[in-house]
Structures are given as structure tokens and as C-alpha cells.
Length: 354
Image (cartoon, rainbow, N blue to C red; front, side):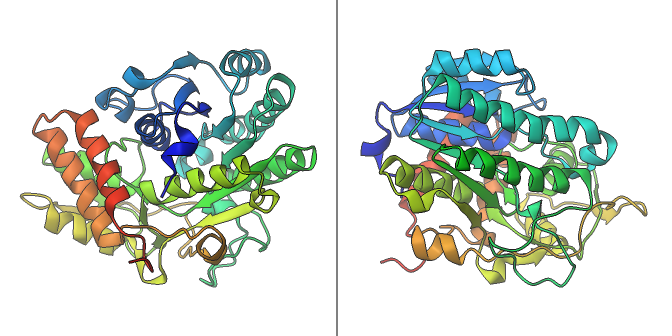
């Protein structure tokens, strides 16, 4: 569990704080007493978790800017003067990468290089955590769980950009930044409204009483609630803050083997949990372009060296996600509900503990 004593009053710079993962992480850091400074482009969706959960209410400062702008990034870092930096800003959608490959490489690779260069020149953070992706690996289709020392690659622009992001981060680590990269499996959770993401598509359809088009029901992914990998980000940052040089490496963050499940299994769980059910039909041919049929992660490194594992299994993750959207439908205070889910996650014993 994150150590509140580490985060109380800690100056944190968080890129992508208006996005799905970024908003959850900003709220968690706020609940831990951190002084959170955000840097992000405009909102990524309408509605957005950032607005629904009133993330801005707990921010120490925030700047709207573009990671592709060297000047904007440097000015934001100089203003925040962070002890810790979390770089989450990204073009994060596989299908958008197919439509806009240049944008994807510029944001994910050039943007990362500019963020890390600004941290070197304008601040002296003791910990830098860069979120990449489980799709950074060269996927041969075998279904063998990827380990951190497996070859990187990617046959679509998004995956290739994430492999290149890993290389860029590694180069800045060699230049002296205390930097870890985090390769998380597929995350789900309340407040995701991004297009072409499974759970977001399902919940949009459920809220509208409309059917959802299922692109690849047999595709296997390492599913986990968003709070699982975010806990990993925090734990790695704590190790870096403590001067643990071995933490400055790549980390897989994935669920137990049994929770690497087909898309169809996740949708079935959502349909049984959502009041009134969910109508599902097959998407048109070609809708799953760019998506490998199987992706699994081996997170042994994080389990053995960090003591990390997702506190919620897949069923619990789906249940919490559906409950969040049901609360939104019913007009609940979504900042309160989101913080309640963070607190509930913290209270859940990690696997293997008493």
C-alpha cells in the first residue's frame, strides 16, 4: 500500500492529469496529501472523469499545454519544481494510431523525450515514472506471457510508438534520470469515456440503452482495475525516492494468469451486473484491425521485488466499474464515489497477505 508519510506534502508533477488514468492518479495522490501539479492538453472526452470527479478542486496547480512543445513543457516543469514526476500524457488508442500515425509518434515518442529533457534541465526529481504499455512488446502471437527482457516492437503505430517510448526513456535513464517505465495490462474502471475502449464502449451503450458492437470477442487481454497499476506506479516511485537504484528499470504490471480473459468474458460480466442487461452484437469485419489475438504479461518482477499485485481480481474490478457508472447514472457525487473506491481498494488485502 502507498505510504502516506512519503506523499504528505510531496511536490508531484503529473502529465496527462485530465485523462482517465491521470485523473484517478491525481485523486489518489490528493487523498495521500501530495501537492499535485498537472500538465495536460484539453479534456480527452465529454463527459470526463476529470470534470465529474472535480479533480481540479484538489490540484495545487495545473497548466494546459502540449507535450510536443519544448517551451511549454519546460515552463511547466520550472513552475512545478517536482520531487516526483509521473508522465502519463499520451495518444493511448490503438485505432486512432492507425488513423493518425504521425500524431501518435510525435506525442508518445517526441513528447516523452521533451518531457524527460525538461525534467533534466529544469528540475532535479528524485523519481520519474513513465507509463508506457503492455503493447510495447514484439508480439509473435504465441500467447506466451511477456517478461521485461523480451524484445520490444510493434506492427501498428501505437504499439511501435510505445516500444520507441521505452527506448527513449532508457536513454534518459542512462543520462542520469532516476527513471522507471511501467508496462501495464488492460485497465478498466469508472470514468473511462475514450472511444474504442471495450468497457467505455459498453458503458456508453448501457447508459443510452443501446447495443454495443463487439469487435474481437475471442481476443485475450490481461485485465485489471485501473487502481492496480496505479498502486504499482506509486510503489516504484517510493522506491526511487528512497534511493533504490534497482527500481530504475522496466516493470510489468498485470493480473493473475486466470484474469487474462477473452473480451467476451468481460462483456458477459458487465451484462450480468448492469441493471437491465446489455445488448451485444458483432462488429463489422475489419473493426479489430491492429489488435493482436492474445496478450499476456508476466509480472513476477513486480510481485517479488515490489510486493505488488492487483488487490481486486477481474470480477471485483468489473463490479466496481459497473457500480461507478450506475452511481453516475443516478446522479451521485462522483468525486466522493471515486475517492470511496480508492479507499475501498486500499482496505482490500493484497493477494498473499493476511
